[in-house]
Length: 178
Image (cartoon, rainbow, N blue to C red):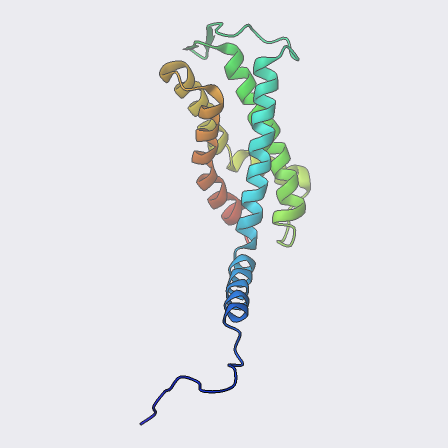
């Protein structure tokens, strides 16, 4: 049998802290390398969220565009919306974020994946396939804020999070499939 004893002289050649650090660093590198596309996707999504939030704030809380006054009721396709300015601002903000996200995905996140067709066609497909996410975002803002009294930027953040899963599935399996 093998009997282990405490070392009586000399020093261990293994540096426990250094070894632990190197092992954890190596594991993190492998984890991130395998998930690099998803990490990039999340970074682009964060950029898109910032673009969306900034555009929504500027359009809703400033007079940069001649939009209806806040809390102006509006009949849109037979549906009465209690805040036309919020509706218009949120639609424009979402489309601004879509343009930003497409450019980032095209040139960074999915740069290495095959591109099918010219960029304008890919952008059109990106808009059509991802249409559910903007609908989720706009619907969330325009339901939670006027009907439940949730602050519009919080509602916007909730809508963005709900659309994240939808976007990941469609972007990786349809627009830029590997």
